[in-house]
Image (tube, rainbow, N blue to C red):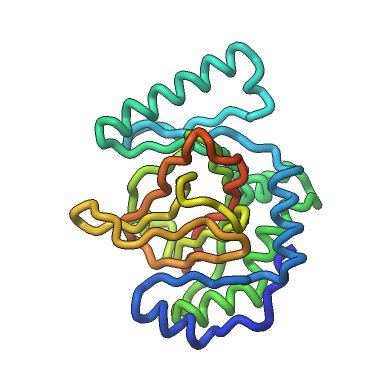
Amino acid sequence: MLELNTKIDRKALAERFRAEGRVQVPDVLTHDSAERLRALLLQATPWQLVWQAGEDGTVETIATRQLSAPEAQAKGAQAAAATDTAARAGQYAFRFASYPILTAYLEGWDRGGPHETIIEGLNSPDVLELVREVTGIAELIKADAQATLFAPNHFLGKHTDANKGQGWRIAYVLNLAPDDWHPDWGGYLQFLDENGDITLGWRPRFNVLNLFAVPCAHSVSYVTPFAPPGRTAITGWFRDN
């Protein structure tokens, strides 16, 4: 599922990461591998709506297949209202669709299923060695993962991933969005300075791996109501424990 492109210029990427603490790896997978991965996310992933409203809030979920039920629709409306209220007050909030690949793997949700090959691929010697070479962090030993889908009205508020207890060293986003993703649709990975100014924004691009050192202030900008529901990715952290 995760077959690396053999033509990646690791030296140039490492120089850029060393200078900036972040880098994009274009065409990180072979085209066929990336297409298979995108098809899996779009066609065969049991998404959950996940949200949090406020720094001390609990992450809540509801399976998207249940959203047609009246009680689930009410809960979804409550999630939208709560996250809107928190974000309006400048508090941390998010809502998007997710499939927790690592949790599913550890708990055996679908033994031998295709999503298990994703977490196995991310933890393969080839992928780990690529990330070690590009970041210069030899201590990286494993990766976790979730699949994400940012549909219209989804967003991820400003945060830093300052969770050293988890061994998080490098945040990653393996983008599988349409290559013609338009800037007006939102869903950009944004990096912020101490004044809240956006210093850099990365457009979702197909088959591009974003790597950046944490902690680092960043967010995913609000996806506009008229955007197509195809902003898919595999996200998580490469870790040293």
